[in-house]
Image (cartoon, rainbow, N blue to C red):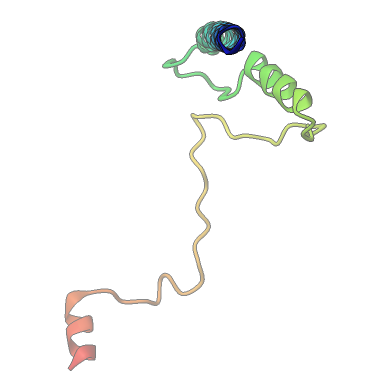
Length: 115
């Protein structure tokens, strides 16, 4: 009788192992399919955004819409009005700090101060 129990246990163990392998292959296949789909979506968004071109609008409407879908799908807040973003042709204005003109960073001034 012990041999029948052993064969039954071995068959059960084999079946459980096969089920685990089948499940892991299914999960890996789903992950690979999802990865390929997202990769193709990203490639399409890159084409639509005109990557590498000198556009005045750094975030085209298609990219902005994709970002909003991403945020909504994850329950994140979506700003009602997008922040005004300066175009690439407009350089960012630097406001001078107070005292920038008064400071002397010349070598002679520093050397005299350190003596």
